[in-house]
Length: 417
Image (cartoon, rainbow, N blue to C red; front, top):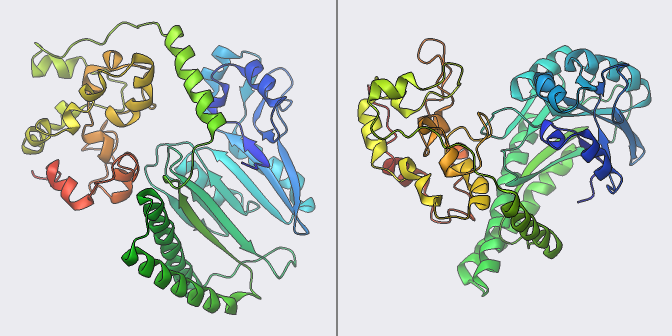
């Protein structure tokens, strides 16, 4: 994919650091991590940063890992540790600022920590964020630092373009509401253009109406690009999220590797102890068996205040989502659980439907509204379910008939006291 640098995330270390370092010998890109270090001397385990020269500008790229993963890391690799990301950030940027025109952080800290870091360290020009539990794409500016993160699960490729005719240090960027609005309109046009091309490619035959719309969109795109030329002598940036749709063909080598992975993982699969069944338990018993330290409390906990919604939910396909993949091969179920259960990847470790804790089966309230621990006193739940939340699973490829308004009505999502 032409990567220059990749930040080490916690999941990259799941098989241990030795496994990862062996893989790096084959990689054509540089792994970076400024705060993943050897415990005995605090020496970086990978390069803390790289400096790339692009169009005459020197761009420093460094990576940070969230130190909340330190205990889990040291179970697998006692010789490694994770330093405080905020202190490390200041140390790295002070070291490379004099040699760099722009500094880019590849972050695994999550949305809230990215913002805090931008406030505390103005030396960073761009934060490309990953990690955390955000269910939506974020593009924002904190002080002078741009923060960009995509929706999870790899459904989009992110692109940030910089136009820098004035390279006088420190490089300053124009904030223009007019330009921003033009960029948004251009982004919408490009997204719709990509969508129409994908639909035409999927149909395999010309469509007169779509062809006319495509021609109109392309003419409007040229018009907006012409208006944007007025900003060509100013420093600015633009961003776009490019949807990965069916028009992007599968790579045969990658598909062969996935098939091989599925075959081999099926041989390695070992059933774990199933979760306690919920059938036969009273409501009181079910509530008592939900772990007190779990951030997710289950739809049964929501029933107390939202009984009408709860009973409507029981009739929906969301409530039975886990059951729909029971017939899938066990090794393949893990790929489906992220959209067919609640809290997958954020709580516990389960690989099949049998292993899902009883209070996390199906697509429950917390999948869309956020974890409910502490609600309503201190919980911060998302009352309105946005289209972006639904699109995490109802992608154009996996759910081609998805209609936001119609589907909300199907799941009885209107809040009632």
